[in-house]
Amino acid sequence: MTPARLIAALALLTAALAMASLAWDPAGLRAVAARDPDLARAILLELRLPRTALALLIGASLGAGGAAMQGLLRNPLASPDVLGPSTGAALGAILAGYQFGGGPLAIAGGGITGAVAALLLLLALAGPAAGTATLVLAGVAISALAGAAMNLALSLAPSPYALYDLMFWLFGSLADRSLPQLAIAAPWLLLGTAALLACRHRLDSLALGEDVAQSLGVDIPRLRWTIVIATGVTTGAGVAVAGSIGFVGLIVPHLVRPLVGGRPGAALLPSALAGAALLTAADMAVRLPIAGEELKLGVLTALIGAPFFLALVLRGRGQ
Amino acid sequence: MTLAAIAIARPPMLAPLSLELVPGSVTGVIGPNGSGKTTLLRALAGLSRGPGTVTIDGALLATLPAARRARRLAWLPSTRDLAWPMLARHLVALGLGPGAARDDAAIAAALAAADAGGFATRRVDTLSTGERARVLLARALVASPDWLLLDEPTANLDPWHRLAVMALLRREAGRGAGVVVALHDLDLARRHCDRLLLLSGGNLVADGPPDTVLSPANLARVFAIRDGIAGWEALAAPPAS
Image (cartoon, rainbow over all chains, first blue to last red):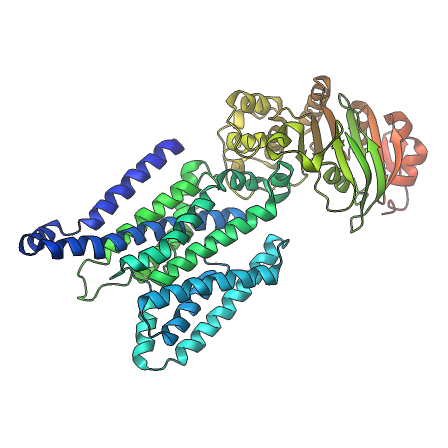
């Protein structure tokens, strides 16, 4: 399959899944529309639309962010949340939740503020001329610090209910997300993902190593910070509105890269599309009434992700 | 190509030196381990942070637009490690520069020149070290750059391919390219280079035609070897570093 055909196929799949997510349970939706057309419109525009759009945007940003981070670090085990901004977003969201009563918009604003603060701290700590290894070390340190602060904040929760709510929120979900939440997160997700996609040629050059890429005219520090900042704001914005959704950014580039001849940059756009498709499909799956309670999206992606790695291990053993 | 008063202070060190290199010829860079061959080639490729400038036809390398760099010079490091299991033809295409239009004819020609045409659709992680070295060499050749800066391109190659690579560099010089090549094989250096730069401990200690540079005195002083009846013979003490 040529890359162009792969992209077309994935775009079709993503579009089909998005339509299915919007028109989920068509019989039930028609029944509601027959009784109360306004209610049906509200379900479609105020519940289904933000939910589907967020699944698409967050999935795309996780797929592209994972592909970009793996390409930058030249490591197939890198994920978009390795450098701290996503943990910073979770910490910011929890603090904002305490301070401003736990409303979804306060949590979203706090999350994005936390992600940006973590990025600024990373820039201050590593310095603009930092090499990739220094950057990763600084990012892991910030991530650990923010994680510890997050656990401290959770253990100091003002009430068991607040703790319960925030823990559940952290598991990751797109249920009951509103248009204002979409409006807060969408610009970051769109701009960040677009910035990542614009790196594709330079990321391919990076396959030859940072020095060779530089000898070919790639501005390595600029590329490095573009990817770090873009993945930072997208993962941060994702955590801010949907909690933490793991494994998508790790798995999707793995699946896509062999289909584009192993090229890290050429994997960016297909990874974004496949991430959008995967998260939209997963979000439809959690809506299936299994245990009465809706399954958490982040729990489901982890449930899908862990066996995937098991499959990689088994394949590696066979070779 | 002119390298003006470049000095690299941190190890491996290279004492201040200025060089004028002429296109259409093969210049060999020789010296023991740690003498500064790689550092010199990196400096020529514009990869050192130290003071000093590289100019090509009077234009500063540092100010050359990224889009024109790949046609101006190609630098091939001595490392053969690759992060991703890419197809050989995709890897060679990267030599055209980031975002350059794909040029299938140039890719095929470069792979053929490095005798790697049979590997075009192979994944580079399935190739042997020597085969991968030839694919990487094709990557350096693909844009037909004005300058080829090659760090031990003959390492890991079998005898036939070593000679083939030196003949290829000669042809590249014949089309007008300037070739600068770091070599450990002094026989190849003597037979296939027009000019040799002899480095020792970060200093340029000799510069000239091979027969002058590879004098018995230089060989003894820099490499601690002598030209014996049955080939190179080691002197008692290793070369000073």
